[in-house]
Image (cartoon, rainbow, N blue to C red):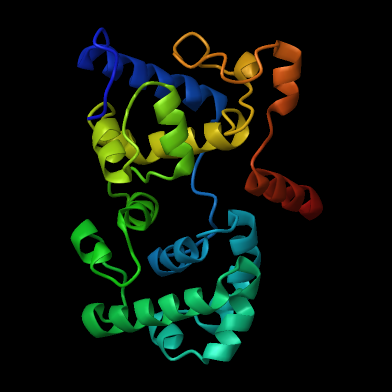
Amino acid sequence: MGARPPSTSPLALTRRARRVDRLLGERYPDAGCELDFRDPFELLVATVLSAQTTDVKVNEITPALFATYPDAVALAGADRAHLEDLIRPTGFFRAKAASLTGLAAALVEHHQGRVPGTMEALVALPGVGRKTANVVLGNAFGVPGLPVDTHVTRVAGRLGLTGEQDAVRIESDLTAMIPKKGWAMFSHRLIFHGRCTCHARRAACGACPLQDVCPSYGVGETDPDRAAALVRITPVQAARSANRRAAR
């Protein structure tokens, strides 16, 4: 584990983490995966595409992508130029196209085209690391996993729950404090908090539900009114709300 204040015992950190989880659950009752998917294959592909872009952008292009390439067999044999055109809006489309076809080919060769449901098998696939594997395990298979992205790293660090910067070590720190069944939701809640309130450049401290438990309170705006103006909903939340309104 990373360096922490000597007075902060493991028990105190566990209590803080679980209180954070409860408070964020109240603040973000709809926290969850923001990538649209219908099965493990779609989630795996969407997660690979989400690198260096937004979930909103991925959700915009995946309907057409999966209509054309609905499974690993189809994606493994995809026309490269056509695939690149479909995923171009997500950025780095040439590298992503190569990753997706290689990943699909490995699924066909080693797993009969199915996405495996274990960490060991997932990280053995080309281009799949622990973060992607944890996303798929926790959201598509219901297997406990705690994905660590930049939001989790920042928020957990500000909360004093870890002193690490390495994602694997952060995952180890956090999973030691939260019951196994709650790992995926704890990650979602930290991500939502990072996107909505605990921003990297100007955190909305004065509108944060964690004021009483956060040792970093004051790194951002503390005036309640000015802080409230900094709070925002995630782009996927906004897009889904707009879709619901349009469907009425």
